Image 1: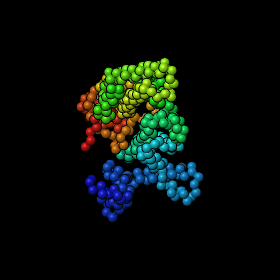
Image 2 (image 1 turned 90 degrees about the vertical axis):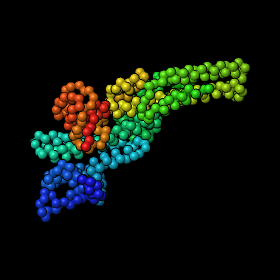
Image 3 (image 1 turned 180 degrees about the vertical axis):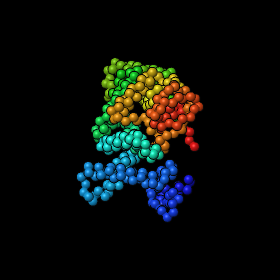
Image 4 (image 1 turned 45 degrees about the vertical axis):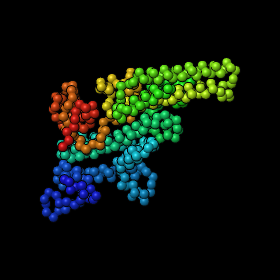
Length: 215
Length: 198
């Protein structure tokens, strides 16, 4: 399938499925690669695409109804679903050297949607829908879960790296969620205790502070 | 020469591979601390000498004052070296906690002191409590998922009858299985299974 590398630049592909003559369909590249991987027929691909777009529409409807923007802005919003927002937040967090403000509402919504899709998948498995289609949903779920987990992980790693600074600066502390604040405090206490026990208590008296060189 | 032992300690740490721990060099560590104490004793004796001569400590800059200053500065430098040593080792210990999980394999355990093992336990507990409160397990999905199911081969020894999410499998050595990615990941991280690609 090496020729597919050149196909990435295009966002949609036309293909003639099922060897049926004169019937061409346009589908997005990503979907084509999914389908090619699992050798779906065209009708299964279309069902999947329809379900997926339906879900994305539901997400943007939910988002649009939550926001107070006018109808002119709705057009610009309609292409950003929760998954896109999560991807953007994840990219920002990975690239930024400092910790960024916590997207609490986004994380909560994403968690809710993941649970919903998990239930759906269980239902599908029970109803005996084609396991290939189920595994496509499962893959999408896995990707979203990975995004969420990686987002939280990157934040925790940044907190671990800069714990004393974050606890000292009010502005940085305001960018953490409640649980992250608790985590940061615990981390700092653990590290300070570790320093004290290994080094500082053995040193002479004026030199026992963690943050200052000497008094 | 003051400060040489601290320098050797730091060099010892830097000479190991990046991200890998060497056994804790307690001999050099204790020698450095002893040197700090010696510095402190000399500072105190010099200060007492200055006070005995009736001179004000802050304002008269005579030879004793500068001697005490030299001791003070070398003590601070030793403190920096020691803290850097401990701090960098603690960084690596934390990193291990994320990569390997809770039980450390014995080759790593023999390189840590008891204090470091305690720190590791405390830190893992902090991470676990965060995961519990946030409601998400953060130790799976370390790599972006390519397939929901992957083929693995069992390399190390695993106890029998582990319960996976779909089925119970018996892990004999060199047997190949087709498992869910999230189930297989902890074993792969510990080196007990390897992923078969291609």
